[in-house]
Amino acid sequence: MPVTLRLEGAEPLARALAESPRTVGAEALRAMTASLLLVEADARRNVAHDTRQLMNSITHQVRQESGGLVGLVGPAARYGLYVERGTRPHWPPRAPLEGWARRHGVPVFAVQRAIARRGTRARPFLVPALTKNLERIVRRFAQAGSRVVATIAGAASTGAARGPGGGAGE
Image (tube, rainbow, N blue to C red):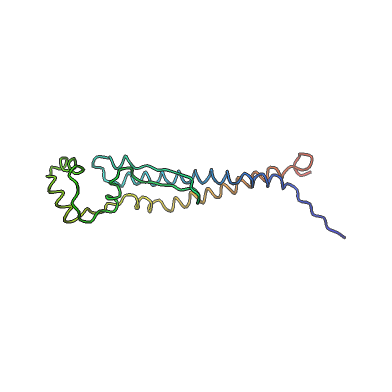
């Protein structure tokens, strides 16, 4: 006695799978943007606030590259890297130090000499912000993956629930 198998409801699944790249992209963008905002907010809280120039320059950016979605968080201010990592001893230019020296009542030459002797101490603000939020970021992307699966399964099962006559379970 032969057994006959018939696959019904494959068309909705095929449509849902065809839509999956768009669904994955939208959820990945959502998770990436939310993650970048977490890191950006904590980096702004962590950074030294002398003039708030560095704090106000911290932004995020999302871009599509050949390898996938890439998110960036960081300061636009050129000196942000030197604050994050510190510097080795060097003779700094006078102009960038004048405002700081004036606000702190210190001669510019004294600041230059101190930097020439000791460098500047690292005051990390980005790496701690990322470290603090890493678990939340991983969780956001896991939730995005779950939403993608639920969306695809929901789209496939909605079409498959209809029988040949359009009603459910005929």
